[in-house]
Length: 181
Image 1: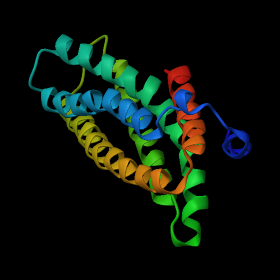
Image 2 (image 1 turned 120 degrees about the vertical axis):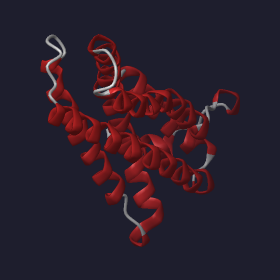
Image 3 (image 1 turned 180 degrees about the horizontal axis):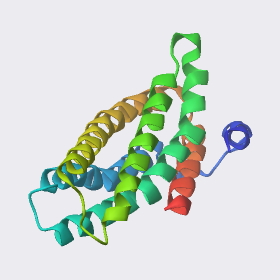
């Protein structure tokens, strides 16, 4: 996808009335993500403290969200924004730390997925509960900081790209995220 958008960013000249905002698109996606990110903390605090069925209902909902919607969001951001940011910032800056955080988020999601086997039998022991809680706390904390940092990078794009270029990125980001959800 990264190769396709490069040509589109330079060739695209939409009618100004049809432009969509990259910042608004990203903020809308983050607004959809944040309630789920916050529920990861709620879920962590429930482990070992509430009735197992209630815990599993929220676990299944939030695991489904992070695996089914957060991962496609990360893929879309990497494919549409990160390469463009690296081009704009040149040798002064790299998006490697953000990509590394995405890798860690994927690992934490995979770790959360290992607890699905317990959903039918409510069989988490104390140590598994601690490990699950730790993974949830880590995922929550990392996502809070990461999403806030992504918002800061949008300012770079806002200052550096034309409205038409931002429109192309916004449409690619929106299409990839909505299509992956």
